[in-house]
Image 1 (tube, each protein chain N blue to C red):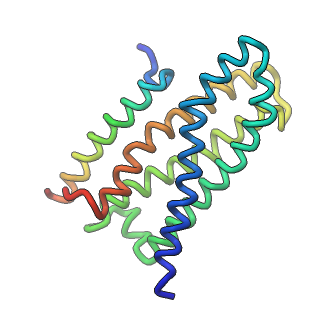
Image 2: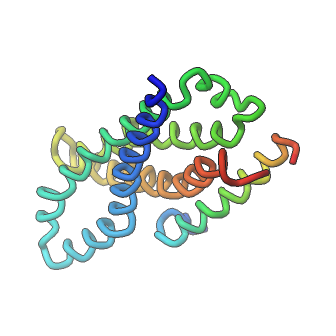
Length: 159
Length: 32
């Protein structure tokens, strides 16, 4: 039983690397690659074969990261989310991670399903979905920077 | 005004700016 917090932390970090790694892949690589691929009509290679696979691991690793983080907080879960004394730093990190998770499942994935043709959508709906998914993904990229800072800060950055 | 999230580097800079803002908010909450 005394191994459990370490195991939760291990899973939290592994899943988090997969999640944020794929988030950075989308934002640092795929957005620009798709633009170039559309210009020479090779975008289907990405939208048909790469994006659905990346999105599968992206959304499930996001959930796994959050669940393992909640397990790691354990009895301090409420103290962290209520930003109680001693838990302000990890609490801010946990809130940022939670907003990011909601963005993944509430905005990015439902809109990506329209973009990739997994659910029916008109061209107008697809265009709107592209913009919403893009901005939600960019928002998560921006939020990941303070989120990681506060995850590290809890034990390693005095304030 | 252009949305900074439309640019990759605008996004990264926005993330760092938000980090600084939240750092000072956290610092004042902690009382440091």
